[in-house]
Length: 268
Image: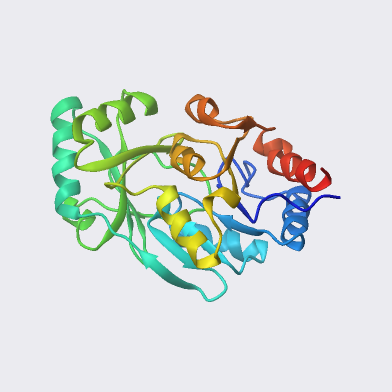
């Protein structure tokens, strides 16, 4: 058996490592365990902020570094502490929102507050996805800006996710970054922030280079991570924009797509 060809395996969570019920299959757990036994590190790279990620990492017995909040937070799971955290300039974000709304009309808003216990605020009209993730509803717009934020979520009553992302980028692309991270999830981030930003910081801490990294993902917000890593693997359920830049496409998250690739590499 040849040595495992990568020193770092970077995996997105939703639509990638996680199945629809937020579980990680036994087969995928075994494949990741085999990879770590072979000397590689596994790192979670997710759009979720730390409070929405921590319970999954604990369930996995994950004690290493994770990249959360689209790269804004580098989190040490074993020590339960933030190593780095980047916040969104609230004045700039407010300006960006006003420009987008001037172009396409009112938006429904949500926001992720900074910190280990940062709450996710949900405004009037924002469509919350079903699931166990906690959030705090608000009615007073001032509440949205009352504490440091890692990102804003925006929704439009008529435009699709792809259309909203495109229009927002065209309107405020020089002020902030705009990414689509999943169904109904379009986010406003600090300019220049991406999963690649956080992953590169985490990899440096681990002494691993981009050329030694394989990455798995499913949505357009994973494109920078694929550009940074040596090899990008899109899930079978991936968005067409990510599939277009992937080095290969594996099975879906429901069909153990990560394990399919790792098992092949381990047995090569």
